[in-house]
Length: 82
Image (tube, rainbow, N blue to C red; front, top):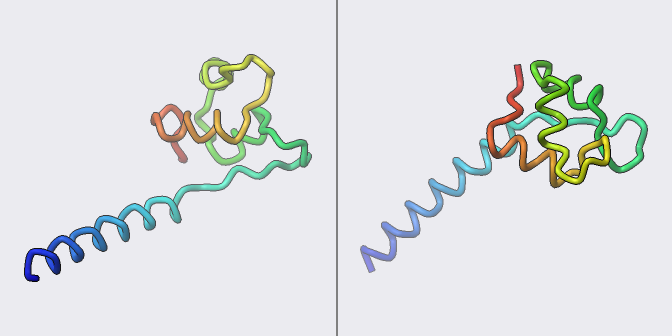
């Protein structure tokens, strides 16, 4: 029973840390409500993002980032908030 309590406590601490990180992540607004994010919309939050970095994150070459592409760039550390 003690092992179970320790595992449960460790899991709770880990989950809390993950939720805290996600809650602190900046939110990019889809200002034109088209369902994707332009370079200008991304740069409003991630000011250091260059056109080159944006294009690298745009894996489908649509000229805008989907929510998935944006999240992948953030998760990979390519986009960091200033």
